[in-house]
Amino acid sequence: MIRLVHKYSGAPVAADATATLDFDARQKSRQRLALDNGDFAGVVLARGTTLSDGDLLTDAERRFLVRIAAAAEPLSYVHCVDRLLLNRICYHLGNRHVPLQLHADALAYRHDHVLDAMVAGLGARPQLCHCAFHPEPGAYDHNGHGHGHGHEHEHEHEHEHDALKGSLSHAHG
Image 1 (cartoon, rainbow, N blue to C red):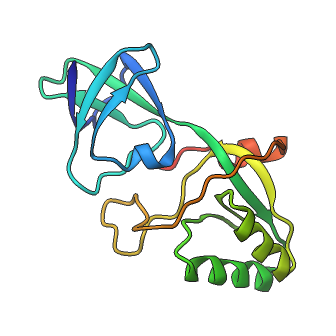
Image 2 (image 1 turned 180 degrees about the vertical axis):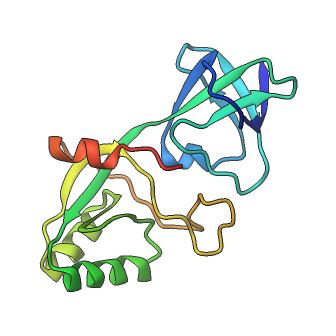
Image 3 (image 1 turned 135 degrees about the vertical axis):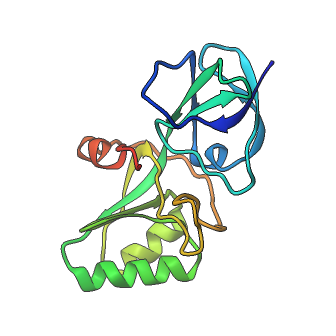
């Protein structure tokens, strides 16, 4: 099993393999990683490292590269042109330590029917989408990634919102 120990930073190169990971897996600094081709790799990174879509990991000899892909996961997406309402929603979700992906007139969080009901009670309409999750880094995070801690819940519902896929699946650098 290959042991990945560094984030690659250098000239763009082709990866030897890819690993598609949800946000939880992209925050683990030590794990056994299932590669998309069926192989496995061990990951031992510095504590607090959060991987982003497109990041490259390499072994100690820098001979093997794995490209990280952010997996689609169930998110609640809230588009809101009323900036005061959007701020109120962010306040109430932030008060619950919910990781948020922020946009100028929208936000996304991990899908949760209880949070959706709260947001609806405030006057907005959350919509379910399946997109990569890139929440806002925590204020004390010095490497530009991560979110501190959160309270995530998994619930399944089926509904696609095609217009959201492009806006929520972009990579952060």
